[in-house]
Every structure is written in structure tokens, then in C-alpha cells.
Image (tube, rainbow, N blue to C red):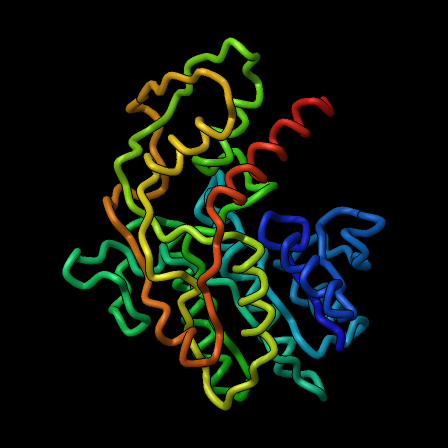
Length: 308
């Protein structure tokens, strides 16, 4: 089976490519720049995802049976750039897929940010919660979802995978644990101060490798109607607890220092997803070994520091 993966060079994309390769699929990644290969997957260049003609040429050449659309950005210099990356690209993919003689199955990577603030009494949040995003990123991802509903009405087989908080080796430094690991990796045996933002928040963290397995399974499960599925565990973990454990695993003396200027994409105190729909499809989101994940994040950061 031929699977086209956009955002293949990203954090989640690399994990998905690894899963596809391990299962023997013909995985083809998409990048804006020329790359020889990525984890054994062939690569194709799409220099302008906003150009529908270029998207059409790509799909006509590759003829994928499945498209896993993982490309996107959490921030951009302008609103237009954000929507070009998170909405227009997806809309072009769906429009072209609808014109193909053999329409591919399409998975779109959504985000928990689409929900916006959820009252504590309604957590863990279900897919039928009325979305009211309070960030530009969340609004753009919800716009992608709305385009998917239109494409599904026109007959395209689609699934929206609403990702919560995947973590693991290779995670970007723009994410809290990735940033903390890189700070620690630059310390010597004497240790140092680890600068953080507010750690007293609860999130639904999941090993990115488990998330990737679930995304592949969702991409392969054909349905006659659009499914929106939370990719989450249903269990909340305090960021402070994970950060403290990361420090313990590092083996160096570290003092935490809060900087209120460091803010994430959300000021929500607790956010946890309901995985009931995922489980009803026979998919198991459990099994994240957080100690093993944190060790892998730190080792990856140390390897990167040594290589520079």
C-alpha cells in the first residue's frame, strides 16, 4: 500500500514514517525542500502547498492509496501564513483527492487546541464538545476540520485525529519537555539552573511512538462517514512531575527557576481527552512508559549537543 505523508520531516511525521516502514508500506514523504530520503522513505518536493496545481501534480504522480496529512505549524509571522499552512494546504489536498479516479483515504492531524477552554467538570473532553478555540492555532485547525466535513459530504473518506500531547525523542525545543531536555543537556556535572514557565498544569501526555501507531491504524480504518477521534490516553499528568523526573534521570544537580515570561500556547490549567471513541475502534492508547520516554528525550538532546 502506498502512503503519502505530509510533514514527514516533523516530530510526529518521523515517528509515523518509522511505523510505516516497519510494517512494509510504501511510504512517501513530502517536503518543501529536496531531501534524498527520510528513514528509508522516498521523498517528494512540494515547494508551495498553497498552489493547487502543484498539489494536483504531486498526487497524480504518486497515486497514493492513503494520505496522512501531518504538516502544519503552531505559529507563523502572519495570520495568512498560519492559515496557508494549516488550512489551505489541507483544503487543496482534499479537493484534488476528490477528483482522483481512485480516491485515497485521508487522515488529517487535528489538535486538542480546537476545543478551546473546557470546564473542569466536562473533562476528559469528548469529541462532541462544542469547539471554541481561544488561540489562532486552534482556530486554524478547526477551520481545517470544517473543510473536512465539506469534503466528506462530497464523498471523500476522512478521519480527523485530534492529537493531544505527544512527547518523545526529537521533540522540538519549542515544547516544554524538549526545551528542558536541551537545557539540561548543555549542563556539565556541576548542574545549573533550569528555567521553566508555569509547571503547575496537567496535560494528556503520550509517547509519540504510540501516537504514531494509532495514527497509522486510524488512517487504514475506512469508514463511510467522517470520524473525529481524540488521540489521547484519558489520563492527566502534571508537567511539574514529569520535569522533576527528567531532572532525576539526568543525574546532575538542577535547580528549577520559574520565568513568568515563558508562556505556552494555552493558559488552561488542566486538559485531558476522552479516548472512548478510539477504544471503541479497537485501538489501545495505553502503554506509555514515561521514564523510558523521558530518558529517550534527554539522550536525544545530549546526542544533538555532542554533534554540534
